[in-house]
Image (tube, rainbow, N blue to C red):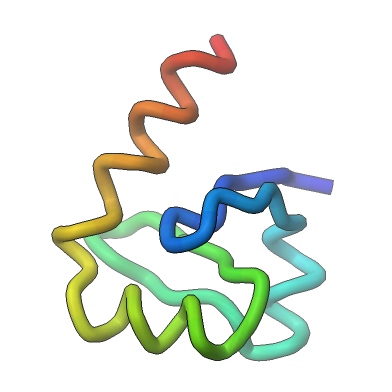
Length: 62
């Protein structure tokens, strides 16, 4: 179970579970996952606004 931050709302979600629901997006060779369709739409409209949040979250976890 790979967990990742939903960069739009800040929830932690399971990448594979959300992929199965169609709630992931690819950006710059990285997969982003979302809690729901609204967050996915917001990310897909302006990914540059959100990608830094995941990078910062990942740094803090290591």
